Length: 63
Image 1 (spheres, rainbow, N blue to C red):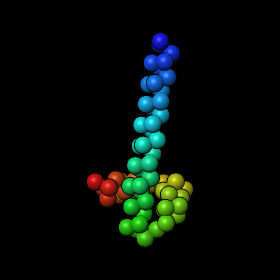
Image 2 (spheres, one colour):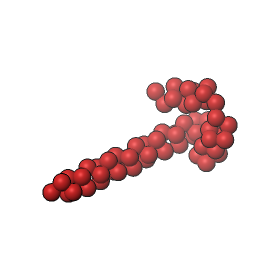
Image 3 (cartoon, helix red, strand yellow):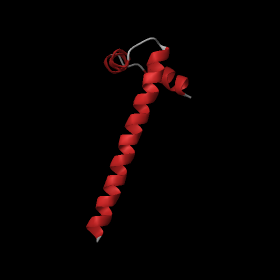
Image 4 (cartoon, rainbow, N blue to C red):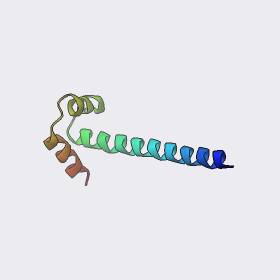
């Protein structure tokens, strides 16, 4: 019984994480489209040249 409950909670957590990842992907895609960048190029620029001002700018645009 306890194993079934834990399994269910795990699946709910996993589905929530997948939903969050999808949402972030959609929102970042819209942001990069506004900046006239492809998703891959924009994501690489955020990862390879991280700066706090870029992340702040991204989240201000999303709000």
